[in-house]
Every structure is written in C-alpha cells, then in structure tokens.
Amino acid sequence: MKRLKIRKKYKISKILLLTLTLIFFLTLFLIKIYSKKVTPKIIEVAETKITKFTESFLSNNIGYDILNDSIIDNILVINKNDDNEILYVDYNLNQAYKALEVVTDEINTLINNLENGEYKNYQDKDIEFSKHGLILKLPLFVSSSNPLFANLGPKIYLKINFIGSILTNIKSQIVDYGINNALVELYVTIKITEELITPVTNNKIETEYDVLIASKVINGRVPDYYGGAIIEKSNMLSIPLE
View 1 (tube, rainbow, N blue to C red):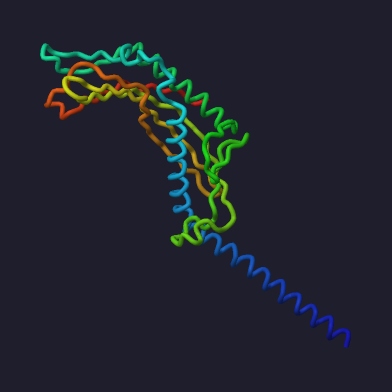
View 2 (view 1 turned 90 degrees about the horizontal axis):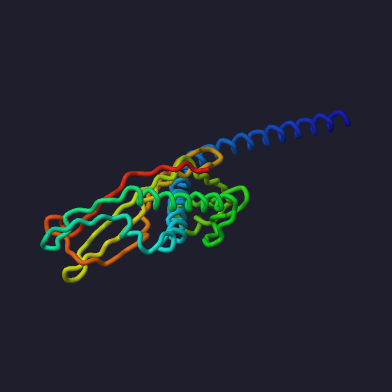
C-alpha cells in the first residue's frame, strides 16, 4: 500500500515538472514572438519622444541671450545695388566660427549636465533624468493600437546616449518686411546624433534643428527673382562630444 502511494506521488511530481517546463518554454516562445512584433513600434514611439525632447531642450536653452546683440552686424555682409535691392549675403567667416564655437561649447556643456541628471526643466513622466544618464520609460503595451491598453504593462527602460560630434552651421534668411524694409533672421542649424539602447536593439537617431538666435529689420528689399527670400548657409563646424 505504501509502495503504491510513493509511486503515485512520484508520477504526479513528474507530470507537474513536465507541465512547468512546458509553460516556461511556451512563455519564452511567446515573449520572443511578441518582442519581435512590437520592438519596431516601440522604437518608433521612442524616436518620436526623443525628437520632441531634443527639440524642446535646444529651443529652451539656445536663443537670443547666448550671443550679443550685434551678432548680425558682425557676421553678415549684406550687399545692395543702387536701387537698394539686396543682391547677395556673405559671411565674415572669423566671426561666424567664433559664434559657432560659443554655441557648440554651450550645447556640449548642456548635454554633459543632461547626462549627469542635472536638467530638470522638462516635464514628461516617460523621461527620467538621473546620474546614470537619460532614461526613457515606456509601457510594454505602448505598441497597442488600442488607446485603452497603450499605457498598460510593465515599464521598458531605454537608455539615451549622445554620441559623435555636434555639427553646427549658421543659416541666414532675408525676407521683405513692409515697404523698402527687410527682415534678417539668423539661425544656428544643429545636428546631433543620439543612440537609443534597448534590451534587444541599438539604434542611432540623427536629428537636425534650426534655432533662431538673432533677427533685425534693415533698410532694403529682396528682388523678385529671389522668390521673396534669400537663404544662405555657412560651412559646417564639428566639435566632438566629450
């Protein structure tokens, strides 16, 4: 009688172990399929959030106050004809490079502070600033097409690194502004490469932004053959991220 009970218990234990093993491998298989299916969607959502964050980060920290008020007069050389029409725009390259160095040095400092968790001026529950760097937190079901489930599930942590170099150049735009006046706008074009690190992928995101740093109304007008606007760009300056 006792021997029968021992054999019965042994048989039940064997079935239980087999069942648990099957559940384990089936779970791994389903996770693998789900991960393969949703990873592209998660990356897409993450890239959108990173792009939005970087744009806000740059526009909030790079602006009119970073350079002095006479920047347009120092950098741009505006050539006119006898009819007060603006023929073309040239750059004082020495002044342009000085301005670009100021901007890139400031961005470099801001990014270092950001990666050390010292940036607090952005409110988004999905982005965390810590001493370990910039962390993006997305719910597992963010890829769901149903908005009721999109915010559900455990958090997936994605690390964001800034890599490579900060590439910048200066762009000017001149448009007619009233009668016999023109509005001169000076932009810094900033190109930053970010690395998005997930448990299963490693993606690079290259983003480019135009940040307005100065504007001024001058006497003159844009000839009709320019189509209403004169746009010029300086050469690109590259400064490696520290």
